[in-house]
Image 1 (cartoon, helix red, strand yellow):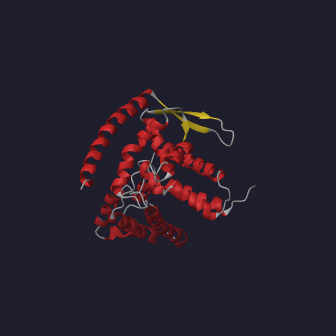
Image 2 (cartoon, chains in turn purple, green; image 1 turned 30 degrees about the horizontal axis):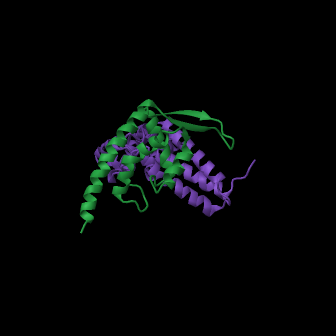
Image 3 (cartoon, rainbow over the protein chains, first blue to last red; image 1 turned 135 degrees about the vertical axis):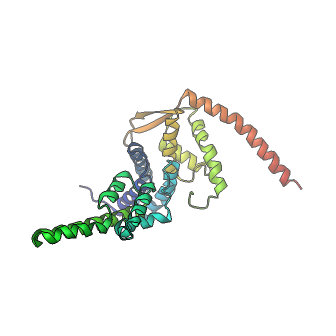
Length: 174
Length: 116
């Protein structure tokens, strides 16, 4: 097994950035762009006399900023609206604003091009109403023995929080 | 926007002409991506980023202006070679005609402006 050098890691990181920049291309086209750029980098490396981090960085600079390649590939640079930053938190807490906040969050979520459909489904169904879903749940939980009710309650509370954090991370990665 | 020192108009000029420069490079025979990227980058900056050649080539292929074949390479993994199609050749001819007129028009106006 060959160990990964720092140069390898620079290249890996570059390819991950590129892959992320073209996230909204169809999977086959995305894979092809990444494959071909990876091949280009490999061939460029074979022409280097001396391979160190500086020469690899210079080589990657020549290959270009991943966003420039993404733009050429027609990946719509996720037009990030100011509203998108609010979405995870509207979904989580918006229910408490007479439920309206949650519906506003859903509208922003589905109209945004920052998230793809699986994430949109996740945001919608985990949990409908966000933390507000705990209110009817706690009424039911009071009737159940604590051994069951406490873990169930924690689970119900954690799921929407994790979902919100996940949606926020996806947004920040764009 | 392409980062770096490119101004907007330069990027637009490139965008408008580089596809046909690729077609022109293929008129005398098939070439592979790395070779095309290096040629364009070394030609005085027809592309600012070598990597942008790949989505561009993919687009030309989807338009049916080029076609590809895989060929073994002595130095490494197989390479995807690009070849001009008949439609590509036609598109290039059309571009060359328009380009000559366009260039003459721009030159005429610029020279007039530069004259004392």
